[in-house]
View 1 (cartoon, rainbow, N blue to C red):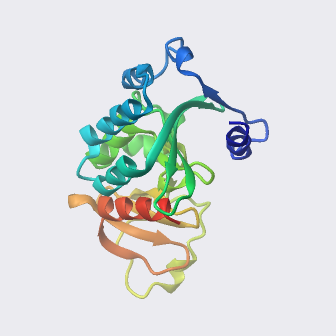
View 2: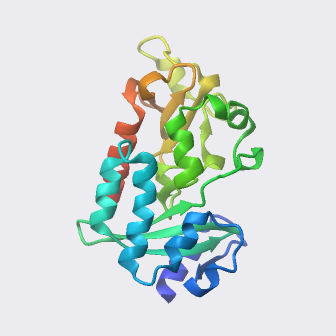
View 3: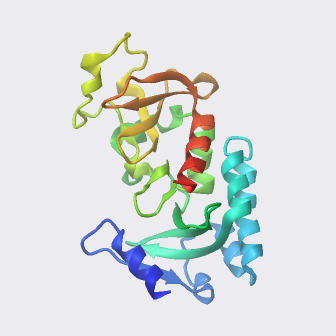
Length: 240
């Protein structure tokens, strides 16, 4: 337990950051959790907690993230409620196929969308984002990712990259081998590999879950299925 806490504290991403594992008997005293989470943490047995949580995934993204869900069913060994820098998340402890222990974070879903949860451009465009993506963030988790990096998964809304942001130096724009096929001013990177590559959605060109693999250095890959590549890469992350 002490090792886990020290590990979690190391990656709070703030100089004055803190993290706390919340015992089950305290859960009912917290008034800001999703209703479904109270049901999870009133279960007495870990396997029942896990089953109840995975049912939430299946209810909302059973098809979109089917491989991720299958992996969790096989290798998720523990879930805990944690408080990190005044936010609540579920900590996933995964004992992967290689026998390694990994910690993933699923933040509390965003029931009421507010600009404090995301950059202004995304807030203004939220209704234009594909409904399945909005469903995940509003009902499953506000991001599900490797705890230490905040990446290799769907990033928290506050970390979604707006590709049209002037702060980004997209050097690849000077070296494109073919004309740019997305509008950066209507594109957002919801999946990050933590090394500058995103699975991005242009909300003006997202029919049938159309997405682009985008980075500063590599040629973009267009016309990918957002959920297929996101699902595949999350599983890759579980075994990296």
